[in-house]
Length: 409
View 1 (cartoon, rainbow, N blue to C red):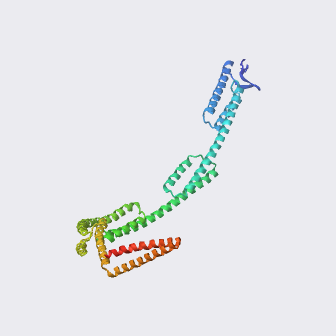
View 2 (view 1 turned 90 degrees about the vertical axis):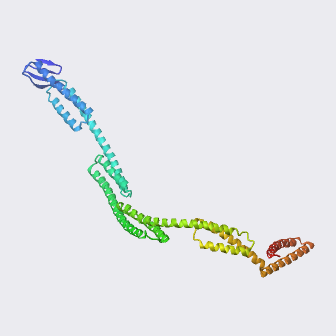
């Protein structure tokens, strides 16, 4: 018979292993010595030690699922419980029990982690839904459309929730995208209709612009072109493929007209500049008549200058006020001389002026006597009041005397 601390072989070749519950039969060995039998079953024990060690490392260092780990533990436990090895089987059971506890803890940890991830995914998806529903009412068609596509990609990267919750959130998310797409489609359909209407309006404007391009009614046609431009801006944009062509045709028709007008105006401007030179010479000739010393001669000479002035055509608009102002100044000076001459030679006006002067002189004399009387009587207040009235009458008298002097007397 042969034995060691964990097992023995009896005379019949039966191999036993020692456990806390007593000896357990491991197997029978007839092929060699008892020592060889023990060594064989000890190697089987070492094999179990290695397998358990490998499983411990897998549980600690890999993402082995709890299900697979439990199956592996059960498989090893069955081998230990069948007592087909010689060694400290109880130590192996304790290691397996510790592995069960580790796997259970990992299972709970993963369960909690999964629950946390699920909650985070729910919050994230609810935020995506809320943003999508807000974007559904947006009119920033390009930006909102791009953002909704980005939200879909984000959604796909999130974990699934339980089926009911995930389906409800996806339904809201999908409905928001569909509502936006429907509104965008309607908007662009309306926009296409508006642009087609704009194209028709602009075609009519182009046709009228082209019909006017050879007009020589410069003022009225230029005004009409300005109106057409206002109508063009109010018409809105046509489709992109038509807009540039319409504008080029519209602008080209205007260019034909305004180029022809410009050439005519250039000739007219040259003529008007020549007219200005001639009128400046006449204005200088008229200004030599001042100051007026001989009214009759000045009047005759100015009439001659003015007749030649009227025979000359237009001058440039910006020069007109200054050149005409010079002639008007000479004309006013001659008119002033005529009025002064008329006042000097008008007997009725002289008589009226002399009569007014006499009346004012009488009033002044009368007031002076009243003031002397008041002062002599000691009535200072009355004298002061009459003095103020006297000052006013004297001022009027001075003006009347100056007017009378204009009549030469």
